[in-house]
Structure formats: structure tokens, C-alpha cells
Image (cartoon, rainbow, N blue to C red; front, side, top):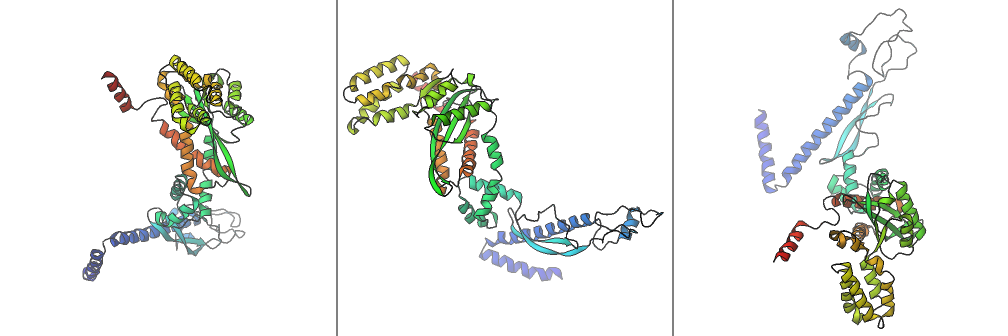
Length: 442
């Protein structure tokens, strides 16, 4: 009889699905949602039963007989009998009223992969019960918080996450909620940013700064973020510092170096600092790391020199500078510099003086292993980081403040640091190395 009733319905549903096959999974999701609602509601009822110390419709006397815990009393007013946490002690006239079930209320809760479900939350008469399975103010399971954080940190603004949340996680999440959820990771981000450095044997330091539009009180200002990347003896790259501060301030850089040493950085192990021509940075670095040498970024030096050369002569001057910085050894580099000096001293004296003032620092990389020269000549490593920072913050246009800036930039930095572990500093890709060897052999 049941089969005769069900079969026409099945045929009807099948006919609808053949007309629109996409509805099949919608129907399955409806069944999953219904099963989830029933299961969670039953678990909450069981939790209340555990809290009250008895099942639904179960009398205290029945529980006593089934558990075999009845005992004789010598004094009816003072005897205490073991019961659930909210049952009245039998025979105790001073005890409070026994707690009972008091129906339920319906609330919405979002589950990953299922969407928003309606669950029945049981209540007790005294209003003392609070579920540990689903918190009173929780509106979605914790795993969805991770999805929201990942969407935000991967480049989607709080407003964008709010717009996408309905389709992706089954519930609209306001921009304020996104901010609250992402705020929970701030402690972990700050711990990573200020981590101890004593376990890392840093030999090279690469430093630079990048400006961001940031909201400061009621105004929008360009705020620099100073970045220091370290290279260890094992060729591992890591972030030593991400700190807000004026990049042209010698005092700021000194405080940054002292902070890193205070976190355990061994100054005696640092052998080289790679930087551009920021005011006072080179002097402060030498004072804080007296055993280290300084390498000026050839890209920044080239830009400074070309700024003092006419537009028509720039390609020629660029080639001459390339001969200096890309020479096969230091002797050839010096010969190229002398040729540059003689060729342009009278034509562009200011350009020649600009290069002359820092030529020694530009060629420091020749004192280090040849396979690292290409990586040591520039601050390109920090520039790539800055480019990734800019790409991530572009959808936001304006950073909401210092703490949100650290939160976003440190996430990008941590992700890049994990990626660096697959490519040690100064190491060429295997197929490039093979190609160069093949070219030399032929």
C-alpha cells in the first residue's frame, strides 16, 4: 500500500528533475538540512536531560529504583541524597524548587556546506541552562570563522566578504562581523611579528620601506611601513621586522635594530646589510652592526644617476652603469667605472659625483660567494614583498589603522615566508642552471 502511494510521487519528482537536472542537488540539500536540524535539536535535548539529571517524563522515584541509590535516613530534614545537579533533595524542606523543562525556542544557525538551519533550543523553568554545544550568542560554526578570515586576508575587503558570504557560506555576514572575526587573529599575528630571533643565525639583512594610505584619527595620511628581511646561514629567508615608522629617520632605524637585538638577534653574525640611500640608514647600521659591510642597491643608485642625465643620453649611460654592476669580477667593474668617470665627468658632473659618493658600497657584493651576487646587488627581495603588499591592499584603498595594517601585511609576509622555504636564497632554478651549463659546453 505504501509503495503504491510513494511511486506516483517518485515519478512526479523524477519528471521535474528531467526537466531541470540542477534541482537534484537542491533536493538533496533540503534533506540534509532537515536531517541536520533534527539531529542537532535532539542533541540539545539530551544535553538538557544531562543537566537536569533525568530524562523526559522520568520521575525521581523511578530514577531511584533504577539506580539502586535509595538509602535510609535517620533524620528527614538533614539527609542529603545524590541526584542530578538541579533536582530537589527529597526530604529537605529548605531546598529550592526542582528545575523542569520549559519547552523550547527556535533559532537560526549556519553550518558549513548545509547553510542556515532552524534548531530547537530547549529551555528550563529556572532559566539556568546554557548549552555548551552551541553557544548562546553563536550564529555559525567556528570553521566558518576561518573561511571568513581567509577570504579577508586573501584580498577581499570586509564589504566584499559581506557581499559574497550569502552565496559562499549560506549566511549574510555584515562588514562589522567580518571585522570582529578577523580581530580574533590579531593576537597570533602580533606574536609572530614580535617573535624571538635567537634561534636564527642571520648573516644578511635587506631593508626598505613602503608607504600606505592609512586612516589616522580623522585624517588620511601616507604612513611608511619599514621592512627588514634576514637571510640565515642555511640560506633561509625570514621577516625580521615589519614596523610602522619614518623610513628617512635615523632614530627610527636605530630603534628597529635595537628591538631586533632585544628579541635575540646576534649582531656579531650579521655580515652584510643591503639598502638604498635612505638618509642616515647606512651610518646607523654600521654603528649597530660594526662587523657588517654595506651594499647599496644598484637599482636605486642607477635611478639616482639617471635622474641627473638628459633623456637622450639615458640609454647610453644605462649601458655604462650595467657594465659596472654586472662585471664578471671586481677588477673589470673598477675598469668600467673609470671609463664611466672619464666619459661623463664633463658632460654630467652631478651624475658622476652621485655614483662616486657610493661606488665602494655598490661593489661590496664581490666579497661574497659568486652564486649570491645577483641576489646581493639589489633590494629586489623587499621590492617584491612591497609589490605583494600593494596588490593585497589595493582593494581596500585605505588601511583602517595601524593594527589592521599589521594584520593584513603580516598575513602576506607569513605566506611569503612559507613559500621561501621551497627556494633557498641565491639558488638558481635547476632548469636555468642546466641551460647555462649546456650553453657553456657548446
